[in-house]
Image 1: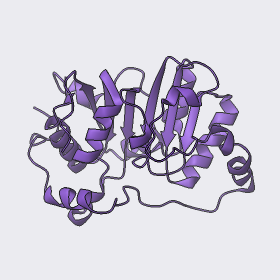
Image 2 (image 1 turned 135 degrees about the vertical axis):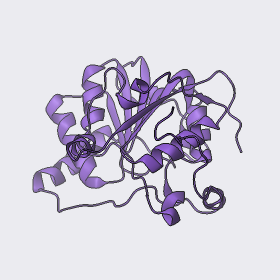
Image 3 (image 1 turned 90 degrees about the vertical axis):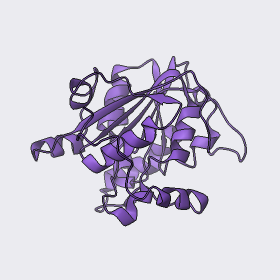
Image 4 (image 1 turned 180 degrees about the vertical axis):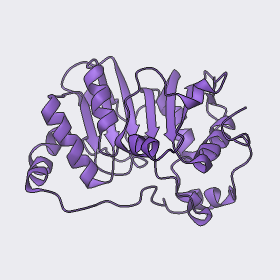
Length: 255
């Protein structure tokens, strides 16, 4: 059986998602700032961030993200909401031939990742210090080999569920950006968000979930790098779930 036995049941109040999609873009993140930044991290934001920031996209224009790197890269991977950047920096260090794009609106997390970039001398990361969703329409079709959404805010209250990142419109966008055979990796310690995600992605024609048994969602895939939030959840005895979806060869049915 899938995680939590009832994982493929419809999520509660799906109509809220459709209402939100028809109107303004609701925030999918909780806050932009935390505790006061040190002078060192403020200096990093001023001095280093401009070197690694994605260029502002032109309205109505899509671009190939390979062009934003100073040297050729073999593929592009996107992490949506990288937190403090442990996973993103670790993957970039292991895969120097891959170009990474990280999106994170929480400025303290951006500062933490910039410190890692400088300390590890990474040149294969580009950053958007903001919500990922406005960026997605500007990326070229089938330009990504892998997308990560790890321990995103689950918005556990029913009245806030329409703020979750996983919706039909965002899945349509991810399907357009992933090349056939590319992967979308989702991880969470919140059972409700796992059920929500399984239902939405399983009902999308552009994705398949190739899991064959519990080990496929109870254990992270090979090459995984643990995030700080993930470690905190495990220390508290919370079960984490790892879902890996594959982009099919069929065209996405855009609503």
